[in-house]
Image 1 (cartoon, helix red, strand yellow):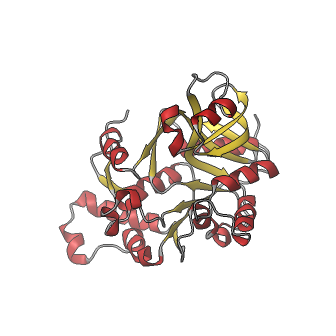
Image 2: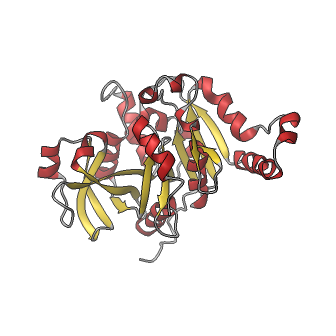
Length: 300
């Protein structure tokens, strides 16, 4: 499909990192889950947030906003915007001295935005409205990292699909029924079998009965469904949807949610789902984090 000249290239990414990390308590009392270490293929221990940012940069993203709690702003700035003390720098190996400079260079691309009250994931996204402006943007979860099965990174795949369709795109993968209670799911009409679809419904953590009756797609196994992968290419209209919920105090489990607003966005504009050729690694749950520590380093 040819790329329309009117399609705006996505240059900005948003990473909400303002949650409490309650499922990883008590460690998250002292260390943000986005700063948990994961060993990369090269053997380097990297904080999760760095791996997410590297994923964004691999897709051509030029500016990145990290949404944090006010008390955590200095921590993220220290990681990316402040080099180590001269005494510490001298103790680093030449390779790590070079990597320290690399972090500061990345810091030039980063803006740290505070969410003064923890009102939910949707509210955290809304906090970036002024920074994003009237542009499409890439939204990334703060506790997921990705590994592509092809040469293009997972984020690149989603952004390329956005360039083709010129409306919001949600990255998807397949999940079995036992995970339905943890994820958002979609259904729709295949545009390209097992690759892309026009989304007709987004459902947050559906029951198995509901999913079987309403969300199953041709070509998938009986109890296999399409779930949200954690990468979104969104138009700025999402902020209008979020603002309406906030102004009308529309909450789910006490918080302003993103998923319900995505379904409103889908109704206002077209929305495409793209089955990402890659793996999503979750670090937000103890057992999943343990599995990630092994699988991410040993990935192909």
